[in-house]
Image (cartoon, rainbow, N blue to C red; front, side, top):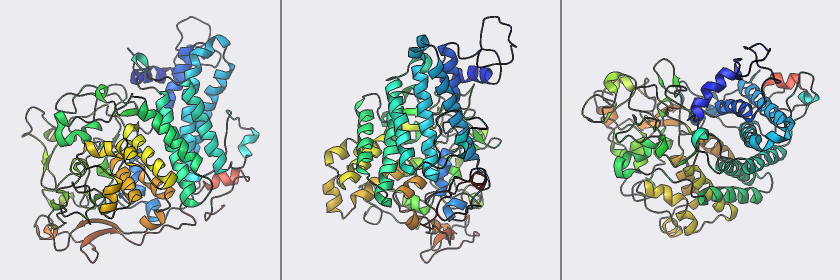
Length: 577
């Protein structure tokens, strides 16, 4: 049976020019034309399969380096506020190139014979989904952009169209998603495993509606209630479908269950009990990868997974967000052990902290060298002791913190997949949208959303009584849970902007571990390191950061596009030329 990753191999051959038809004709066998393709439903399916390459197969999680919870070696121009308007943009060009492909297929579907329409309607749904997904990415970056609904030629008048408004783009995205919901199937089995379902479209709708609803609320840019209602409704449909459940296999993995979710493979090599992607009921849509046909991409020769959290340099801001096991933040909990030892701050904390991050002087395994590979039958062999010498500073970590989310422990290549949409995000969308509608949320709604996430990592329930009795803020706790659960999956920078807190969080110095006066400084393995520190002794990785609220909430349009199309207008604060 052909699952999606096997269909990729066929699609590649077809789309680069090999003949996919079996019947003999007089057309050249190494060239495809519109007349010789689009003859049956399988042709439309193969064309739509190519769209799945546009899912975040590489580096979506690295976008968290643009925020406060991750740091790029050498810094990040966007997070430090020093980025300039580019002459050209691969993101802009690539987005419109993809949109042309979606529009091309939509046009071919509309032109297809009536007898084919029922068989190819699902591929119209796929094209609409991907068009909405791409426009949403552009909306987050630029705000309003030109909406293009047809495949353009070099002389198309739409090439000189002005930007559509932000509201028009949002309405267009949701219109595409709503139509896709009606066209996509309830579920996919057999040869269609891995393809879109209506619930992936509903998850996208929930994500879009929450983003724009909260953007409008906190930026004061229009009515937000209708969008938050749509976010609640779409999320609720996914939650109520019965198709998805959180991955919770503490029965076999113990505290490591959360981490193993992110490294499930097709053949069960990545965990001690042989679970595979077929055991994952949490993912709604994953980036299709296969060890043999389309393996997980890696950074460099034998390097890290392209979305590996170790490339993120987790920051003190991230580490301080993890709750203590009593459900309280570190500044309120008597369980917090402080920073004086290299491992004290990891004690008595949310188990996601210890399973997502390397703890100094503990043994770990990795895929990079044979002597590091995990042997499931004998955990005493191979591996490495994290931070056993001072060489990790400036090499593996700039902050003293290091992550292992998405990191396998066995030899690559693998077919681990990036979770584009998963139930955990939908639960968080539901809770936040419910709260932001009226700035309140019932315990019942917390129990069917956020508390499911807290329960699987052993944290006590979040309730209105718990918040009140401990002097907490419900909005902050909902946002905390979102940031921790979805960390290094690419959400944080966009979250800070939609909440309009980027102007508060991003100018703060990037900090690492507490060095001065702690075991880090007195341990001879690390004592030769010299760092800039703050008054409390925490390492300062980067200072003098800027976020201009009149400019930096949107990215600049590429200058070349403004020159080519004088009807485009630049975002506020950025140069026209």
